[in-house]
Length: 466
Image (cartoon, rainbow, N blue to C red; front, side, top):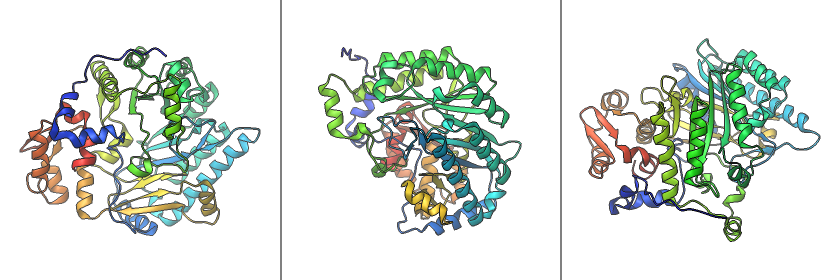
């Protein structure tokens, strides 16, 4: 396979070569990504402890983020670490219906254990996966009707539905519009057919474009896609073409994600399933290289990120939080804003296999083993598999990390009002002072602002220094 290496260094490269930033270079070289998941630090925290914390926070809550996670997929991508259940063969519809049954039953168990969920206002409700767009239309209708009738949906609640671009048929689009969905998300990943094929994706680039255009024609106000960079055989020029397609089709929002192969279970940057992704296996990766394939270098990955960031910002997109882009006037992503903005940081409840739920004091993850999950639901137990808590210092640090991930200035007055401490006193004075000396943030009386290099490296800064 022919490959042309880029000769252009990314702008952040000078900062990464600074010996004072060696730990940041080590972090990004080791492959974790993140800044959106902040695990607790109190081990031995019980599931009931989390549910009690959630109850306490919901008593006076602002809008929360509510997930319904449907783990079914027709195939598994070669990079996917998430807990998914394959539904192929003649019993597809029965299996899909069963997962809706379990999801609704689990939701009922949450409502019984945390009655405040019934009235907590829902800011955004997301049906994610997996590939929930595989569901038969009758099950989509049953699922959405249940949540609307049993949770705190208001006139301001937005409903988002995720799926594979090839599965959003005109009939399903019509059903979703009828049921009040205004937002669609799809994991396009790339508009390069060769890259898609190596990922194991079973759709073409043209199917992705068709999805966007059909959704726009059907009247959806928000059509979001996921793009990935750092993929097998992907080049900077390929990513430039991805950007061109986004701009040509005036896509509402784009989430850009670096390929991440280090285990989520180790890095806690996501919820991992029980089996590693094929690309995580060293022997698999080595064989691909021997067969003539290539993995983009770290420099190339940052050039890809730079191409996307520069191009989207120049075209009128706002980045908030990091690598989540929405057309100016439409962002930030509502559900991310609910969770990470400095003045919000409200609870999220994720119902379904492997869901990640959190409140200010603790977090919990639903069981990722589907048999254990199903047994718990059938026995009438909320199927949470683990929980961790945040002590007082960790709650404050988590708030700072979340706020920085928005790329908005970290306000000293808000921090003082929320935590009774100052960003200009220890330990923050020393932490941000060091970052300022290295040109990664600027500090003034108003608070802390990331520089350009700081924005690019925010994940590494958050996870190694704060």
